[in-house]
Amino acid sequence: MRFFIAVLCFSFAINLSAQERRNKGNSDRMESMKIAFITQELNLSPEESQVFWPEYNIYEKELKALKKEFRQDEGFLDDISEADAGKLIDQKLDFEEKKLQLRRQFISNIDGKLTKKKIVKLMQVEEKFKRELLRRVRNKIEQKEQRKLENKRN
Image 1: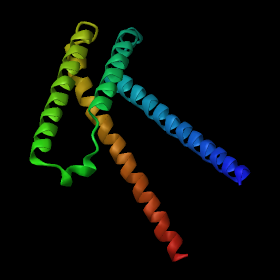
Image 2: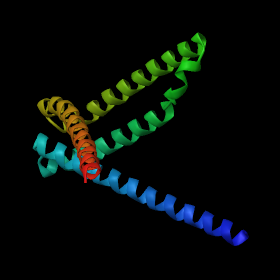
Image 3: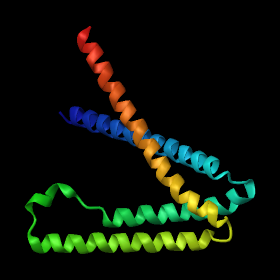
């Protein structure tokens, strides 16, 4: 019995580790795509890239930490009181304010390192990248569903 439990735990740990590596690989690939996309769309010179990317990486790291701090499970919203809902509204507004402050600081840090035109274009390019990612995800989902339909027919 102990052997069975040990094997089960070991199997679970290996499976979890493989899933974490797969998720990390996807995250790394997405990050590489984002870097290439932004660099190309902004037409960054090597000199601009050297000063821009360290600042952008700091901004992204701080933004990720901020999101993690304010992350909430929205599945329980049907069961909360009005008072708790009011607190959530305040928390969400605080998050949005901090996110805006972080964005302003980032833009202040890159002002003078990139032209103002490139800074404005960066804002557009980030949104364009998000739309492109969503489009790709939708396409993958549609392709999977199409394969499922084809497999059911066969």
